[in-house]
Length: 498
Image (tube, helix red, strand yellow):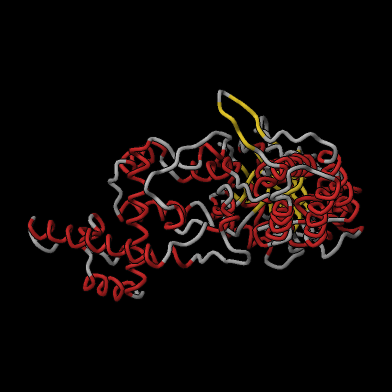
């Protein structure tokens, strides 16, 4: 998602490496890279020029403090950090804030409008599920009476999310919406979500129908659903609707399917209408509150910790997670625990989206690299092919056991050995982390010093930096084999093979 923008800002930041001050020449060179990425992302030229002017004004002629003291500690920053900060703040200002839909008091109506193919019907179901989780009782209204099977599609989606769907035969959409609102008031429902008809383009007939629905139902909010993959055309469509209807917000769909992201950046600036929500997948729960701070941070490659924690809290029992963390930091981390964490990640959404929310993860991945979603399923298959004893004590897994596990999971012996080696390094790292009392790099992320782990080479984890030499790699494997033989002998003394 938004790879084009991230690549441009990363290149601009790299241009400022080694620069001791922000001169007009160095700023202009960095802004040139940003300009190219914004235009490639299909952002309107006028908006690009305004953004670049604002960033340039913040950077040129500024005294850059390379050191700052806070709490007795000295933090070091670079001119590139100042440039990134200016870009971040201007991106947030460009995209605006995304206020959530307020809680319903009396029965109210929300009207979704947009062209065909923007994902309006599926967005209506996602919004209904979101409000349901907030404690409301929503009602979906099938007001698209022209598109074939539109009513049936909404009925299916309504069953999936457990929300009632109001549907009637006939071609009078305004009358159907009016009867749906009356039904909601009579039955004590909170929010009526109207899925209106769309067209291939804005026309007079469509607008007259939408205006008639608005007159009869008087919706509290009118939300425009836009396809973010349409780029600049999505901005033009939003302008067209804003000229005829009083829009209260925008919902950007398919944001995960667009590497450019020009609509996300420019649509609020072009229309004056705030983006309230974005959708990032086909699943019914893939509706997120639009947060300009989080998206700007992801564009700059700095992740989105707040968004990541929200995803985590939705799928994890916090009390159980704390118990697992304490056991993990005591070095009692088994492959069974690892499988549980893996399944938690799978429930949090696509792995690519999660990695984008991890701070600076994009800097550790080679340009153009793709996250293999199937890899998690292969790891799960390998762990499930192990016996309970092997999952608890993977040190007992020898070559013959590796062969059996590989055959059972449809993988190669080398795949199983790689998994065990990575798990061993991970467990050693976490064990030392628990003894050291700090998370490496966390302090640095928030401006502090941050402790380092003695005796651990981060590159051995495959997390960036230079890979270990062949000699070091052989030494690591030899040490792993020695521990494996020792654990096997201990296991045999306790009762033989499990």
